[in-house]
Image (cartoon, rainbow, N blue to C red; front, side):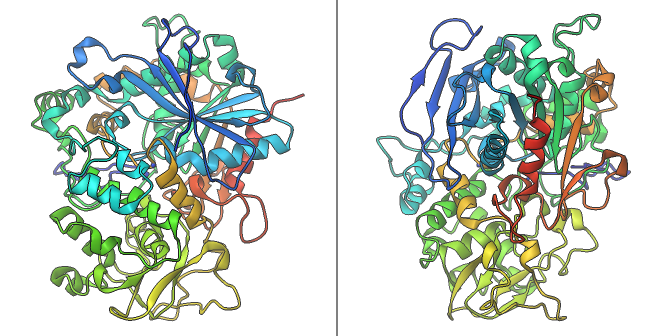
Length: 573
Protein backbone atom coordinates (compact mmCIF):
# COMPACT_ATOMS: atom_id res chain seq x y z
CA UNK A 1 0.00 0.00 0.00
CA UNK A 2 1.33 3.43 -0.87
CA UNK A 3 0.75 6.82 0.64
CA UNK A 4 1.84 9.78 -1.45
CA UNK A 5 1.26 13.46 -0.80
CA UNK A 6 1.14 16.50 -3.08
CA UNK A 7 3.57 19.40 -2.79
CA UNK A 8 0.81 21.16 -0.87
CA UNK A 9 0.95 18.42 1.73
CA UNK A 10 -2.42 16.80 0.99
CA UNK A 11 -2.83 13.06 1.28
CA UNK A 12 -3.49 11.38 -2.06
CA UNK A 13 -2.59 7.77 -1.88
CA UNK A 14 -3.13 6.12 1.45
CA UNK A 15 -2.86 2.44 0.72
CA UNK A 16 -5.25 0.17 2.49
CA UNK A 17 -5.73 -3.44 2.69
CA UNK A 18 -8.39 -3.43 3.23
CA UNK A 19 -13.20 -9.58 10.54
CA UNK A 20 -18.26 -18.57 17.74
CA UNK A 21 -16.68 -19.97 20.29
CA UNK A 22 -17.38 -22.91 22.65
CA UNK A 23 -15.57 -23.98 25.81
CA UNK A 24 -12.59 -22.39 27.54
CA UNK A 25 -9.11 -23.63 28.33
CA UNK A 26 -6.98 -21.40 30.54
CA UNK A 27 -3.29 -21.89 31.15
CA UNK A 28 -0.21 -19.84 31.85
CA UNK A 29 1.79 -18.96 28.76
CA UNK A 30 5.38 -20.19 28.90
CA UNK A 31 7.42 -17.37 30.34
CA UNK A 32 4.35 -15.18 30.73
CA UNK A 33 4.31 -15.12 34.50
CA UNK A 34 1.46 -15.92 36.86
CA UNK A 35 -1.46 -18.20 36.04
CA UNK A 36 -4.27 -16.45 34.22
CA UNK A 37 -2.05 -14.38 31.92
CA UNK A 38 -2.98 -16.59 28.96
CA UNK A 39 -6.30 -17.98 27.81
CA UNK A 40 -6.99 -20.27 24.88
CA UNK A 41 -10.58 -20.79 23.77
CA UNK A 42 -11.51 -23.45 21.19
CA UNK A 43 -13.49 -22.05 18.25
CA UNK A 44 -16.40 -23.97 16.77
CA UNK A 45 -16.60 -23.44 13.01
CA UNK A 46 -18.96 -24.47 10.22
CA UNK A 47 -16.13 -24.34 7.67
CA UNK A 48 -16.20 -27.15 5.10
CA UNK A 49 -12.40 -27.30 5.42
CA UNK A 50 -12.17 -29.92 8.13
CA UNK A 51 -9.16 -31.34 9.89
CA UNK A 52 -8.18 -27.92 11.24
CA UNK A 53 -8.41 -27.02 14.93
CA UNK A 54 -8.95 -23.32 15.64
CA UNK A 55 -8.66 -21.47 18.92
CA UNK A 56 -8.58 -17.88 20.13
CA UNK A 57 -5.55 -17.03 22.24
CA UNK A 58 -5.19 -13.99 24.49
CA UNK A 59 -1.92 -13.20 26.27
CA UNK A 60 -1.47 -10.48 28.86
CA UNK A 61 1.16 -8.04 27.59
CA UNK A 62 0.46 -4.68 29.28
CA UNK A 63 1.27 -1.36 27.69
CA UNK A 64 3.62 0.85 29.71
CA UNK A 65 1.91 2.99 32.33
CA UNK A 66 2.90 6.06 30.31
CA UNK A 67 0.28 5.05 27.73
CA UNK A 68 -2.40 6.32 30.08
CA UNK A 69 -5.87 4.99 30.91
CA UNK A 70 -7.24 2.27 28.63
CA UNK A 71 -9.64 -0.67 28.91
CA UNK A 72 -8.20 -3.71 30.68
CA UNK A 73 -8.74 -5.75 27.50
CA UNK A 74 -6.21 -3.53 25.74
CA UNK A 75 -3.42 -4.87 27.93
CA UNK A 76 -3.80 -8.21 26.15
CA UNK A 77 -2.72 -9.35 22.71
CA UNK A 78 -4.94 -11.71 20.74
CA UNK A 79 -4.58 -14.08 17.82
CA UNK A 80 -6.41 -16.93 16.09
CA UNK A 81 -4.42 -20.16 16.19
CA UNK A 82 -4.99 -22.70 13.40
CA UNK A 83 -3.33 -26.14 13.48
CA UNK A 84 -3.81 -29.68 12.23
CA UNK A 85 -6.45 -31.40 14.32
CA UNK A 86 -4.32 -34.56 14.40
CA UNK A 87 -1.05 -32.68 14.87
CA UNK A 88 0.85 -31.81 18.04
CA UNK A 89 -1.03 -29.85 20.72
CA UNK A 90 1.98 -27.69 21.60
CA UNK A 91 2.99 -25.01 19.12
CA UNK A 92 6.66 -25.65 19.81
CA UNK A 93 6.23 -29.17 18.40
CA UNK A 94 4.78 -28.01 15.06
CA UNK A 95 6.93 -28.26 11.95
CA UNK A 96 6.43 -24.55 11.20
CA UNK A 97 4.50 -21.60 12.61
CA UNK A 98 3.33 -18.85 10.26
CA UNK A 99 2.56 -15.56 12.05
CA UNK A 100 0.60 -13.04 9.99
CA UNK A 101 0.22 -9.28 10.44
CA UNK A 102 -3.06 -7.80 9.13
CA UNK A 103 -3.40 -4.89 6.73
CA UNK A 104 -5.08 -1.56 7.40
CA UNK A 105 -8.67 -1.86 8.65
CA UNK A 106 -8.20 -5.62 8.94
CA UNK A 107 -8.52 -8.03 11.84
CA UNK A 108 -7.49 -11.61 12.52
CA UNK A 109 -10.77 -13.03 11.19
CA UNK A 110 -9.82 -11.99 7.66
CA UNK A 111 -7.17 -14.75 7.54
CA UNK A 112 -9.63 -17.56 8.30
CA UNK A 113 -9.84 -19.14 4.84
CA UNK A 114 -6.18 -18.84 3.88
CA UNK A 115 -5.14 -20.16 7.30
CA UNK A 116 -7.39 -23.22 7.05
CA UNK A 117 -6.38 -23.88 3.44
CA UNK A 118 -2.66 -23.56 4.24
CA UNK A 119 -2.77 -25.88 7.26
CA UNK A 120 -4.71 -28.42 5.17
CA UNK A 121 -2.32 -28.24 2.20
CA UNK A 122 0.65 -28.74 4.51
CA UNK A 123 -1.01 -31.74 6.19
CA UNK A 124 -1.51 -33.31 2.76
CA UNK A 125 2.26 -33.04 2.34
CA UNK A 126 2.91 -34.69 5.71
CA UNK A 127 3.62 -31.46 7.58
CA UNK A 128 1.90 -30.25 10.76
CA UNK A 129 2.08 -26.47 10.71
CA UNK A 130 0.33 -23.69 12.58
CA UNK A 131 -0.99 -20.39 11.28
CA UNK A 132 -1.32 -17.50 13.76
CA UNK A 133 -3.57 -14.66 12.55
CA UNK A 134 -2.77 -11.59 14.64
CA UNK A 135 -5.14 -8.94 15.88
CA UNK A 136 -3.66 -5.50 16.41
CA UNK A 137 -3.87 -4.26 19.99
CA UNK A 138 -6.47 -1.65 18.99
CA UNK A 139 -8.93 -4.42 18.10
CA UNK A 140 -9.50 -4.72 21.85
CA UNK A 141 -12.12 -1.96 21.52
CA UNK A 142 -14.50 -4.04 19.41
CA UNK A 143 -17.72 -5.47 20.82
CA UNK A 144 -18.86 -8.69 19.09
CA UNK A 145 -21.91 -9.22 21.32
CA UNK A 146 -24.56 -8.30 18.73
CA UNK A 147 -23.02 -10.30 15.89
CA UNK A 148 -22.33 -13.24 18.19
CA UNK A 149 -26.10 -13.44 18.82
CA UNK A 150 -26.38 -15.03 15.37
CA UNK A 151 -29.42 -12.95 14.40
CA UNK A 152 -29.44 -9.89 12.15
CA UNK A 153 -32.32 -8.07 13.83
CA UNK A 154 -30.84 -8.66 17.26
CA UNK A 155 -27.49 -7.33 16.05
CA UNK A 156 -29.03 -4.20 14.52
CA UNK A 157 -31.08 -3.58 17.66
CA UNK A 158 -27.97 -3.99 19.82
CA UNK A 159 -25.65 -1.71 17.87
CA UNK A 160 -28.13 0.92 16.71
CA UNK A 161 -31.18 0.90 19.00
CA UNK A 162 -29.74 0.40 22.47
CA UNK A 163 -31.37 -2.99 23.12
CA UNK A 164 -29.70 -5.50 25.42
CA UNK A 165 -28.24 -8.85 24.45
CA UNK A 166 -27.54 -11.34 27.24
CA UNK A 167 -27.86 -8.54 29.77
CA UNK A 168 -25.33 -6.32 28.01
CA UNK A 169 -25.95 -2.92 26.42
CA UNK A 170 -23.69 -1.59 23.67
CA UNK A 171 -21.56 1.23 25.04
CA UNK A 172 -21.47 3.15 21.77
CA UNK A 173 -18.65 3.82 19.36
CA UNK A 174 -15.53 5.09 21.10
CA UNK A 175 -14.79 8.75 20.43
CA UNK A 176 -11.44 10.42 19.82
CA UNK A 177 -11.31 11.90 23.34
CA UNK A 178 -11.32 8.39 24.83
CA UNK A 179 -8.42 7.17 22.72
CA UNK A 180 -5.47 9.05 24.18
CA UNK A 181 -3.64 5.77 24.81
CA UNK A 182 -3.72 5.08 21.06
CA UNK A 183 -1.68 8.18 20.24
CA UNK A 184 1.49 6.10 20.52
CA UNK A 185 0.32 2.91 18.81
CA UNK A 186 2.67 3.30 15.89
CA UNK A 187 5.17 1.06 14.15
CA UNK A 188 7.45 0.76 17.21
CA UNK A 189 4.67 -0.55 19.48
CA UNK A 190 3.26 -2.78 16.74
CA UNK A 191 6.51 -4.65 16.15
CA UNK A 192 7.19 -4.74 19.90
CA UNK A 193 3.80 -6.39 20.39
CA UNK A 194 4.70 -9.10 17.87
CA UNK A 195 8.05 -9.71 19.58
CA UNK A 196 6.53 -9.86 23.06
CA UNK A 197 3.84 -12.26 21.87
CA UNK A 198 6.37 -14.54 20.18
CA UNK A 199 8.69 -14.64 23.17
CA UNK A 200 5.79 -15.33 25.53
CA UNK A 201 4.41 -18.17 23.39
CA UNK A 202 7.75 -19.58 22.17
CA UNK A 203 10.43 -18.76 24.77
CA UNK A 204 13.30 -20.42 22.88
CA UNK A 205 14.96 -18.02 20.45
CA UNK A 206 16.64 -20.93 18.69
CA UNK A 207 13.25 -22.55 18.11
CA UNK A 208 11.76 -19.30 16.80
CA UNK A 209 14.66 -18.88 14.40
CA UNK A 210 14.21 -22.44 13.14
CA UNK A 211 10.42 -22.68 12.91
CA UNK A 212 8.70 -19.27 12.68
CA UNK A 213 7.80 -17.66 9.34
CA UNK A 214 6.90 -13.97 9.69
CA UNK A 215 4.67 -12.15 7.22
CA UNK A 216 1.45 -10.37 6.52
CA UNK A 217 -1.11 -9.01 4.12
CA UNK A 218 -0.93 -5.55 2.54
CA UNK A 219 0.38 -3.15 5.20
CA UNK A 220 1.35 -6.28 7.13
CA UNK A 221 4.25 -6.72 4.70
CA UNK A 222 5.62 -3.30 5.68
CA UNK A 223 5.15 -4.11 9.37
CA UNK A 224 7.07 -7.35 8.75
CA UNK A 225 9.88 -5.32 7.17
CA UNK A 226 10.16 -3.13 10.25
CA UNK A 227 10.02 -6.21 12.45
CA UNK A 228 12.89 -7.80 10.52
CA UNK A 229 15.01 -4.67 10.94
CA UNK A 230 14.17 -4.02 14.60
CA UNK A 231 16.33 -4.37 17.70
CA UNK A 232 14.48 -5.32 20.87
CA UNK A 233 17.05 -5.14 23.68
CA UNK A 234 18.45 -1.66 23.01
CA UNK A 235 21.90 -2.98 22.16
CA UNK A 236 22.55 -3.20 18.44
CA UNK A 237 25.73 -5.24 19.00
CA UNK A 238 23.71 -8.19 20.28
CA UNK A 239 21.60 -9.84 17.62
CA UNK A 240 19.78 -12.76 19.25
CA UNK A 241 16.94 -10.30 19.92
CA UNK A 242 17.01 -8.76 16.42
CA UNK A 243 13.77 -9.17 14.49
CA UNK A 244 15.30 -11.18 11.68
CA UNK A 245 16.56 -13.71 14.21
CA UNK A 246 13.01 -14.47 15.32
CA UNK A 247 12.10 -15.75 11.85
CA UNK A 248 13.23 -18.49 9.50
CA UNK A 249 11.68 -16.68 6.54
CA UNK A 250 9.21 -14.00 5.47
CA UNK A 251 6.00 -14.10 3.42
CA UNK A 252 4.12 -11.24 1.78
CA UNK A 253 0.47 -11.47 0.62
CA UNK A 254 -0.30 -8.85 -2.06
CA UNK A 255 2.46 -6.72 -0.62
CA UNK A 256 6.24 -6.71 -0.25
CA UNK A 257 8.46 -7.07 2.80
CA UNK A 258 10.01 -3.62 3.09
CA UNK A 259 10.37 -0.62 5.38
CA UNK A 260 9.01 1.69 2.68
CA UNK A 261 5.69 1.67 0.92
CA UNK A 262 7.43 1.59 -2.46
CA UNK A 263 5.14 0.70 -5.34
CA UNK A 264 2.26 -0.36 -3.17
CA UNK A 265 -0.70 1.75 -4.13
CA UNK A 266 -4.34 2.26 -3.49
CA UNK A 267 -6.18 5.20 -2.07
CA UNK A 268 -9.24 6.37 -0.31
CA UNK A 269 -11.18 9.61 -0.67
CA UNK A 270 -9.37 12.74 0.50
CA UNK A 271 -11.85 13.39 3.35
CA UNK A 272 -10.58 10.73 5.76
CA UNK A 273 -9.54 13.15 8.54
CA UNK A 274 -5.89 12.21 8.08
CA UNK A 275 -3.39 14.81 9.28
CA UNK A 276 -1.23 16.83 6.92
CA UNK A 277 2.12 15.15 7.50
CA UNK A 278 3.95 18.10 5.96
CA UNK A 279 3.86 19.42 9.50
CA UNK A 280 6.62 17.01 10.48
CA UNK A 281 6.89 14.15 12.94
CA UNK A 282 7.01 16.23 16.13
CA UNK A 283 3.98 18.32 15.28
CA UNK A 284 1.98 15.28 14.14
CA UNK A 285 2.81 13.46 17.37
CA UNK A 286 1.83 16.49 19.41
CA UNK A 287 -1.45 16.63 17.52
CA UNK A 288 -2.14 12.97 18.24
CA UNK A 289 -1.20 13.36 21.91
CA UNK A 290 -3.49 16.36 22.34
CA UNK A 291 -6.36 14.92 20.32
CA UNK A 292 -6.28 17.79 17.81
CA UNK A 293 -5.54 15.15 15.18
CA UNK A 294 -7.76 12.06 15.01
CA UNK A 295 -6.20 9.03 16.68
CA UNK A 296 -7.97 6.54 14.43
CA UNK A 297 -8.39 6.35 10.68
CA UNK A 298 -11.95 7.11 9.60
CA UNK A 299 -14.08 8.57 6.84
CA UNK A 300 -17.79 9.43 6.61
CA UNK A 301 -18.47 6.66 4.07
CA UNK A 302 -17.62 2.98 4.72
CA UNK A 303 -14.48 3.60 6.76
CA UNK A 304 -15.70 4.16 10.29
CA UNK A 305 -16.68 1.86 13.18
CA UNK A 306 -20.41 2.21 12.59
CA UNK A 307 -20.37 1.25 8.94
CA UNK A 308 -17.65 -1.39 9.27
CA UNK A 309 -19.96 -3.16 11.74
CA UNK A 310 -22.46 -3.54 8.89
CA UNK A 311 -20.18 -6.04 7.13
CA UNK A 312 -20.45 -8.52 9.97
CA UNK A 313 -24.22 -8.00 10.17
CA UNK A 314 -24.58 -8.55 6.42
CA UNK A 315 -22.47 -11.68 6.81
CA UNK A 316 -24.95 -12.99 9.38
CA UNK A 317 -27.80 -12.84 6.88
CA UNK A 318 -25.85 -14.54 4.09
CA UNK A 319 -24.58 -17.22 6.46
CA UNK A 320 -28.06 -18.02 7.77
CA UNK A 321 -30.00 -17.87 4.47
CA UNK A 322 -27.99 -16.97 1.38
CA UNK A 323 -30.93 -17.13 -1.04
CA UNK A 324 -33.58 -15.68 1.26
CA UNK A 325 -34.92 -12.20 0.55
CA UNK A 326 -33.08 -9.65 2.68
CA UNK A 327 -34.85 -7.16 4.91
CA UNK A 328 -31.61 -5.66 6.28
CA UNK A 329 -31.66 -2.50 4.10
CA UNK A 330 -35.09 -1.59 5.39
CA UNK A 331 -34.42 -2.62 8.99
CA UNK A 332 -31.31 -0.47 9.42
CA UNK A 333 -31.74 3.01 10.91
CA UNK A 334 -31.53 5.88 8.46
CA UNK A 335 -28.72 7.87 9.98
CA UNK A 336 -26.13 9.91 8.10
CA UNK A 337 -23.38 7.26 8.05
CA UNK A 338 -25.60 4.47 6.81
CA UNK A 339 -27.45 6.59 4.27
CA UNK A 340 -24.22 8.00 2.82
CA UNK A 341 -22.69 4.53 2.60
CA UNK A 342 -25.77 3.07 0.90
CA UNK A 343 -25.79 5.86 -1.66
CA UNK A 344 -22.07 5.45 -2.29
CA UNK A 345 -22.44 1.72 -2.91
CA UNK A 346 -25.81 1.52 -4.64
CA UNK A 347 -26.07 4.69 -6.72
CA UNK A 348 -26.08 3.98 -10.45
CA UNK A 349 -24.78 7.43 -11.29
CA UNK A 350 -24.18 10.87 -9.80
CA UNK A 351 -27.82 11.87 -10.14
CA UNK A 352 -28.94 8.84 -8.13
CA UNK A 353 -26.32 9.55 -5.47
CA UNK A 354 -27.42 13.15 -5.05
CA UNK A 355 -31.13 12.42 -5.04
CA UNK A 356 -31.00 9.19 -3.06
CA UNK A 357 -33.40 7.61 -5.54
CA UNK A 358 -33.61 4.79 -6.26
CA UNK A 359 -32.34 3.73 -2.84
CA UNK A 360 -31.11 0.27 -1.91
CA UNK A 361 -34.41 -0.22 -0.07
CA UNK A 362 -36.19 0.05 -3.43
CA UNK A 363 -34.60 -3.17 -4.72
CA UNK A 364 -35.47 -6.73 -3.83
CA UNK A 365 -32.21 -8.45 -2.91
CA UNK A 366 -31.29 -11.77 -1.37
CA UNK A 367 -28.94 -11.86 1.61
CA UNK A 368 -26.22 -13.10 -0.73
CA UNK A 369 -26.78 -10.17 -3.09
CA UNK A 370 -26.53 -7.69 -0.20
CA UNK A 371 -23.16 -9.10 0.90
CA UNK A 372 -21.95 -9.32 -2.69
CA UNK A 373 -22.88 -5.68 -3.26
CA UNK A 374 -20.83 -4.71 -0.20
CA UNK A 375 -17.62 -6.58 -1.07
CA UNK A 376 -17.57 -7.89 -4.65
CA UNK A 377 -15.14 -6.30 -7.11
CA UNK A 378 -17.95 -5.69 -9.62
CA UNK A 379 -19.79 -3.59 -7.06
CA UNK A 380 -17.70 -1.90 -4.37
CA UNK A 381 -15.52 0.83 -5.92
CA UNK A 382 -12.67 0.67 -3.38
CA UNK A 383 -9.97 -1.79 -4.47
CA UNK A 384 -8.68 -2.55 -0.99
CA UNK A 385 -12.15 -3.88 0.00
CA UNK A 386 -12.70 -6.04 -3.07
CA UNK A 387 -13.18 -9.78 -3.32
CA UNK A 388 -14.28 -11.89 -6.30
CA UNK A 389 -17.32 -13.72 -4.96
CA UNK A 390 -19.57 -14.07 -8.03
CA UNK A 391 -22.13 -11.77 -9.65
CA UNK A 392 -25.68 -10.44 -9.48
CA UNK A 393 -28.41 -12.58 -11.00
CA UNK A 394 -32.19 -12.63 -11.32
CA UNK A 395 -32.79 -9.44 -13.31
CA UNK A 396 -31.39 -6.76 -15.62
CA UNK A 397 -27.98 -5.32 -14.72
CA UNK A 398 -26.68 -1.84 -15.59
CA UNK A 399 -23.28 -0.19 -15.67
CA UNK A 400 -22.42 1.69 -12.51
CA UNK A 401 -20.85 5.05 -13.33
CA UNK A 402 -20.65 6.45 -9.81
CA UNK A 403 -18.18 7.25 -8.28
CA UNK A 404 -15.83 6.36 -11.15
CA UNK A 405 -15.99 5.52 -14.80
CA UNK A 406 -16.36 1.78 -15.34
CA UNK A 407 -13.10 -0.07 -15.27
CA UNK A 408 -11.30 2.50 -13.14
CA UNK A 409 -8.35 2.61 -15.55
CA UNK A 410 -7.36 6.11 -14.47
CA UNK A 411 -6.98 5.14 -10.81
CA UNK A 412 -6.90 1.33 -10.55
CA UNK A 413 -5.34 1.54 -7.09
CA UNK A 414 -8.54 3.12 -5.83
CA UNK A 415 -11.25 1.56 -7.97
CA UNK A 416 -9.75 -1.68 -9.19
CA UNK A 417 -9.92 -2.86 -12.78
CA UNK A 418 -13.23 -4.73 -12.74
CA UNK A 419 -16.26 -3.23 -14.45
CA UNK A 420 -18.83 -2.03 -11.92
CA UNK A 421 -22.45 -3.20 -12.13
CA UNK A 422 -25.70 -2.61 -10.29
CA UNK A 423 -29.26 -4.00 -10.39
CA UNK A 424 -31.38 -1.96 -12.80
CA UNK A 425 -35.01 -2.60 -11.79
CA UNK A 426 -36.19 -1.08 -8.50
CA UNK A 427 -39.47 -2.54 -7.20
CA UNK A 428 -38.93 -5.38 -9.65
CA UNK A 429 -37.53 -8.92 -9.61
CA UNK A 430 -35.72 -10.55 -6.72
CA UNK A 431 -32.00 -10.09 -7.39
CA UNK A 432 -30.05 -13.16 -6.34
CA UNK A 433 -26.34 -13.93 -6.14
CA UNK A 434 -24.54 -16.30 -8.51
CA UNK A 435 -21.68 -17.86 -6.53
CA UNK A 436 -18.12 -17.91 -7.82
CA UNK A 437 -18.34 -21.56 -8.98
CA UNK A 438 -21.54 -20.95 -11.01
CA UNK A 439 -20.25 -18.04 -13.08
CA UNK A 440 -19.97 -19.29 -16.65
CA UNK A 441 -22.41 -22.16 -16.14
CA UNK A 442 -24.80 -23.11 -18.94
CA UNK A 443 -27.59 -21.12 -17.26
CA UNK A 444 -25.46 -18.01 -16.68
CA UNK A 445 -26.85 -15.12 -18.78
CA UNK A 446 -23.34 -13.64 -18.97
CA UNK A 447 -24.18 -10.01 -18.25
CA UNK A 448 -22.26 -7.44 -20.27
CA UNK A 449 -21.44 -3.79 -19.85
CA UNK A 450 -22.91 -1.16 -22.16
CA UNK A 451 -19.87 -1.40 -24.44
CA UNK A 452 -20.29 -5.16 -24.77
CA UNK A 453 -17.54 -6.12 -22.35
CA UNK A 454 -18.44 -9.04 -20.04
CA UNK A 455 -18.61 -7.90 -16.44
CA UNK A 456 -16.85 -11.07 -15.32
CA UNK A 457 -15.99 -14.68 -16.14
CA UNK A 458 -15.12 -17.91 -14.28
CA UNK A 459 -11.40 -17.09 -14.30
CA UNK A 460 -12.07 -13.89 -12.35
CA UNK A 461 -14.21 -15.39 -9.58
CA UNK A 462 -12.36 -17.14 -6.78
CA UNK A 463 -14.05 -16.67 -3.37
CA UNK A 464 -17.10 -18.49 -2.01
CA UNK A 465 -19.58 -15.90 -0.72
CA UNK A 466 -20.81 -18.38 1.91
CA UNK A 467 -17.34 -18.75 3.39
CA UNK A 468 -16.77 -15.01 3.22
CA UNK A 469 -19.99 -14.62 5.21
CA UNK A 470 -18.77 -17.20 7.72
CA UNK A 471 -15.46 -15.40 8.21
CA UNK A 472 -17.30 -12.10 8.75
CA UNK A 473 -19.98 -13.38 11.11
CA UNK A 474 -18.67 -16.50 12.83
CA UNK A 475 -15.16 -15.59 13.95
CA UNK A 476 -14.56 -14.42 17.54
CA UNK A 477 -12.10 -11.78 16.28
CA UNK A 478 -13.31 -9.36 13.63
CA UNK A 479 -12.63 -9.60 9.91
CA UNK A 480 -12.48 -5.82 9.84
CA UNK A 481 -10.76 -3.37 12.16
CA UNK A 482 -12.95 -0.61 13.50
CA UNK A 483 -10.25 1.46 15.22
CA UNK A 484 -7.08 1.61 13.14
CA UNK A 485 -4.33 3.72 14.79
CA UNK A 486 -3.58 6.83 12.76
CA UNK A 487 -0.04 6.82 14.13
CA UNK A 488 0.76 3.58 12.33
CA UNK A 489 -0.04 5.35 9.06
CA UNK A 490 1.81 8.57 9.88
CA UNK A 491 4.91 6.74 11.09
CA UNK A 492 5.26 4.89 7.81
CA UNK A 493 4.49 7.99 5.78
CA UNK A 494 7.20 9.77 7.79
CA UNK A 495 9.71 6.94 7.31
CA UNK A 496 12.55 9.38 6.53
CA UNK A 497 12.17 11.27 9.81
CA UNK A 498 14.88 10.57 12.41
CA UNK A 499 12.28 9.27 14.86
CA UNK A 500 11.20 6.52 12.46
CA UNK A 501 14.55 5.87 10.78
CA UNK A 502 16.07 4.97 14.15
CA UNK A 503 13.71 1.98 14.31
CA UNK A 504 15.54 0.39 11.36
CA UNK A 505 18.50 -0.83 13.42
CA UNK A 506 19.34 -3.91 11.33
CA UNK A 507 18.55 -3.10 7.68
CA UNK A 508 20.43 -6.25 6.68
CA UNK A 509 17.64 -8.19 8.35
CA UNK A 510 15.38 -7.64 5.35
CA UNK A 511 17.58 -9.94 3.26
CA UNK A 512 18.72 -12.26 6.02
CA UNK A 513 15.98 -14.85 5.37
CA UNK A 514 14.20 -16.28 2.30
CA UNK A 515 11.06 -14.46 1.17
CA UNK A 516 7.86 -15.69 -0.47
CA UNK A 517 5.89 -12.97 -2.28
CA UNK A 518 2.35 -13.91 -3.34
CA UNK A 519 0.41 -11.39 -5.40
CA UNK A 520 -3.18 -10.96 -6.48
CA UNK A 521 -3.24 -10.91 -10.28
CA UNK A 522 -5.66 -7.97 -10.23
CA UNK A 523 -4.65 -6.59 -6.83
CA UNK A 524 -2.95 -3.41 -5.67
CA UNK A 525 0.44 -4.40 -7.10
CA UNK A 526 -0.74 -5.84 -10.41
CA UNK A 527 1.99 -5.43 -13.03
CA UNK A 528 4.20 -3.27 -10.83
CA UNK A 529 6.39 -5.69 -8.87
CA UNK A 530 10.07 -6.08 -9.82
CA UNK A 531 10.66 -9.38 -11.57
CA UNK A 532 13.58 -10.20 -9.27
CA UNK A 533 11.09 -10.89 -6.49
CA UNK A 534 9.89 -13.95 -8.45
CA UNK A 535 6.38 -13.69 -7.02
CA UNK A 536 3.68 -16.32 -7.09
CA UNK A 537 0.82 -14.66 -8.97
CA UNK A 538 -2.76 -15.71 -8.29
CA UNK A 539 -4.54 -14.91 -11.56
CA UNK A 540 -7.93 -13.24 -11.31
CA UNK A 541 -7.53 -12.46 -7.61
CA UNK A 542 -8.35 -9.11 -6.03
CA UNK A 543 -6.64 -7.67 -2.94
CA UNK A 544 -8.70 -9.53 -0.33
CA UNK A 545 -8.96 -12.75 -2.37
CA UNK A 546 -5.47 -13.77 -1.28
CA UNK A 547 -7.06 -14.25 2.17
CA UNK A 548 -10.55 -15.43 1.27
CA UNK A 549 -10.28 -17.64 -1.85
CA UNK A 550 -11.92 -21.07 -1.95
CA UNK A 551 -9.66 -24.14 -1.61
CA UNK A 552 -10.49 -25.33 -5.15
CA UNK A 553 -10.71 -22.88 -8.02
CA UNK A 554 -12.88 -22.87 -11.15
CA UNK A 555 -10.07 -24.37 -13.21
CA UNK A 556 -10.09 -27.36 -10.86
CA UNK A 557 -6.70 -26.52 -9.39
CA UNK A 558 -5.84 -26.05 -5.71
CA UNK A 559 -5.93 -22.49 -4.41
CA UNK A 560 -2.47 -21.05 -5.27
CA UNK A 561 -1.89 -18.75 -2.27
CA UNK A 562 -2.24 -21.47 0.36
CA UNK A 563 -0.40 -23.92 -1.90
CA UNK A 564 2.50 -21.45 -2.12
CA UNK A 565 2.53 -20.88 1.63
CA UNK A 566 2.42 -24.60 2.39
CA UNK A 567 5.28 -25.22 0.00
CA UNK A 568 7.30 -22.37 1.52
CA UNK A 569 6.68 -23.78 5.01
CA UNK A 570 7.76 -27.28 4.03
CA UNK A 571 10.62 -28.55 6.16
CA UNK A 572 13.02 -31.38 5.16
CA UNK A 573 12.33 -34.78 6.66
